Length: 156
Image 1 (cartoon, rainbow, N blue to C red):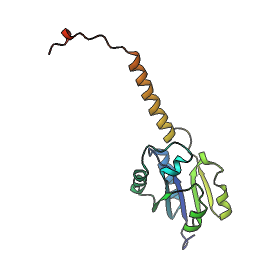
Image 2: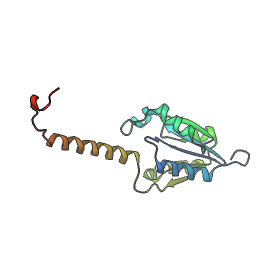
Image 3: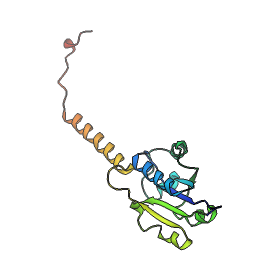
Image 4: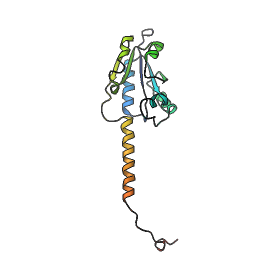
C-alpha cells in the first residue's frame, strides 16, 4: 500500500481489443485506488503463442486511451516478481485462463484475482473465426466455376 492507496496491476496482450478485455480492466479498476495496466510486448507474446495481429505500440495506445488505467506500461516478462517489488503492487488481476500460474505472488504479499473470463469472445477465438470464415469463402469461390465468357457477349 502506498499512503493508504491500493495499487492493482493487471496485464495482458490485449490483441484485437474486445469486451472481455474491458471487463477485466474494469474489474481491476474496481479494486484499485491506483491501476497499472501492463501490455505484453510482441517479443514476449511470441515466446508462448502466435505473434499478435495488432502491433505492440498500437495495443499500448489503445489501453492508454481508456479512462480506467492510471498508468500503462510495457510488460516484458511473465514473471511479475520484479514489477511487484518495484511498484509496490498490492493485488494482481489476470484472466482465469492463467489460473494458478501467478499463485507465487501470494508469497510476496500480493492478492491474486483470477478474473472469470468465461466463454465467448477472446482474441484467439476472433482470429480463428476470421480465418475459418475466410477459408470457407475461398473454398466456396473455388467450387463455383464461372460460366465461360465469349467476347461477343460483351461488346465494348
